[in-house]
Length: 253
Image (cartoon, rainbow, N blue to C red; front, side, top):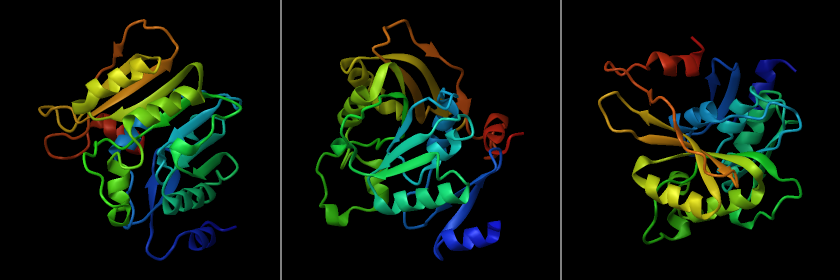
């Protein structure tokens, strides 16, 4: 099928198609739902992915599928992904079709808390979870897509780390992106659930500003052998253009 015809069939009138230049991939996004952010791009870049087709990979809190779509270029493995919001799952499935990845990416609409332990455990789980704790939960009728994606309304830190523990093989890896101001909560929760933190990298909006993002790789039942703090990544230069490293991630140059 011609690319333009396929796009017309898959993309709805109020949606747009954004491109990943380096990977030669496209993704469908909607102004009505939470679009992917630089956090997801950094996590996809940070994760060490099993390359073989037999590798088992799952993405928690997948949104519109950005992380599985990007990881598909770095592995021959099929990738499962779970997302709570049905419209985002629908977009992710259509993006997979747009890129010819529908046989390799399996998007599941579900509450992660309700997913049973899989028969085959995973080698890698990636997660770009809700970051912000909620003291007084709002009525579900008033929640927006953005609030669900960013706040621990339906999924808490404790819940997704627990689920990663029961979905991963021994020595399987959990790669996540989180906020530095909750790093103590994250580390405590990971250690309590049998994870050892293996790698860590901080991302800074600009060189003179505090870190806004921390990337973590933790190993389930891997033993505590020390943490490697990788070189920091800075997103913007003083003139608000991307740094050379971010340009390479986005554009491949």
